[in-house]
Amino acid sequence: EAQVTQNPRYLITVTGKKLTVTCSQNMNHEYMSWYRQDPGLGLRQIYYSMNVEVTDKGDVPEGYKVSRKEKRNFPLILESPSPNQTSLYFCASSAQGLSYEQYFGPGTRLTVT
Amino acid sequence: GDSVTQMEGPVTLSEEAFLTINCTYTATGYPSLFWYVQYPGEGLQLLLKATKADDKGSNKGFEATYRKETTSFHLEKGSVQVSDSAVYFCALSDQGFQKLVFGTGTRLLVSP
Image 1 (cartoon, helix red, strand yellow):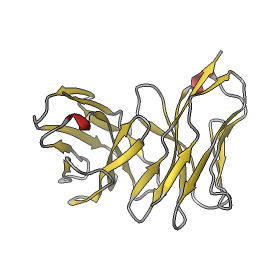
Image 2 (cartoon, each protein chain N blue to C red; image 1 turned 45 degrees about the vertical axis):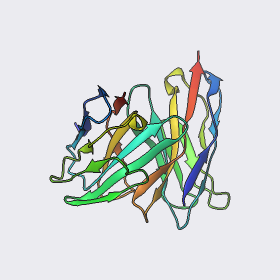
Image 3 (cartoon, each protein chain N blue to C red; image 1 turned 90 degrees about the horizontal axis):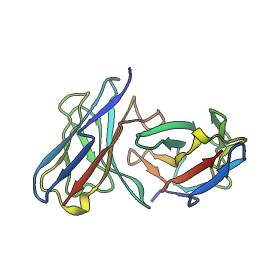
Image 4 (tube, chains in turn brown, cyan; image 1 turned 180 degrees about the horizontal axis):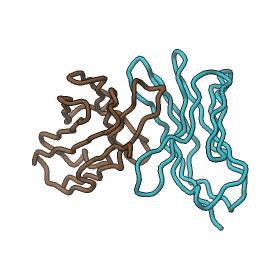
């Protein structure tokens, strides 16, 4: 089954404790992206990757890091989480670009206290 | 920069009513336009898309037409069902920055 998986689905952590949210896709997609969803703001892009070892900032990259060492994986790293990073996070992938369907993961709800 | 504006919700309808969710956009160039749907507790799924002016996207009884002259991409369905209750997001592709630009989402509630 074609899918994007994220782990964990739910995470409660404390300020400053490094964490990683994993994202993996099994569709051999080149393009992957991370979004955060906040009430009243819709989804905003954090980082994206056009292919292995190629990443770039989106609209709200501050406080986040990513890496793309393998085509299927695109982890999101919060080196020192803060309460304003409490949000719902989605990973997405697509075949070649934005005119193609974006496949979204189920989301990770992160709470930073 | 590019932006998408959708009507605020929630939109509350009875089953079999007609649905319109308005979406307008601002963009340089010629973006592709999308409607995504988010069911409770799930990620977003593509509902329909249109890649050029006057294209009509359709799926599961939903339709939207890419209107360049009015910069709009309104979502319509002739007869909604309870199972259509979800949040609907209008989006455009920003090729220059390789991202989807989303509206804020419109929650649809359909009662029996």
